[in-house]
Image (cartoon, rainbow, N blue to C red):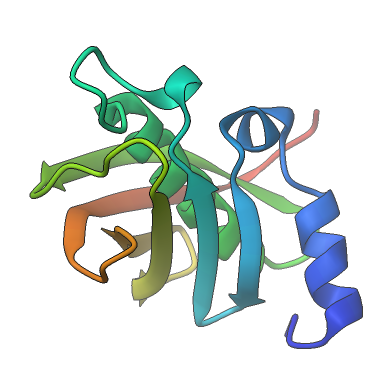
Length: 139
């Protein structure tokens, strides 16, 4: 369980470069819940001045991968095999997106996670459900 400052730091440092590129900042990580914050910057916005849907999906995918990673047996890895996003509200420039990822199913071969993305006012902006495949990775 990653519930102390040292554990959180280790999980934060193990994030892929893509998460850093998005500006995703790990706030909380346990096997039952992962939370990331991400500032909405011009680099992540669409032409309407709101967070691009692809950035939302990238944030949620990273949260689901991190959550799965925290639940893997030694020597196993994971990859996303399915992801569905419902976009409900925009998140404007300057606001912060918060992704809260919680398990729907944690099995031996697959895990299913739901990530709720909220904006600064607490309103839900998107809900992402994804399936992670557990695999032996010799790479």
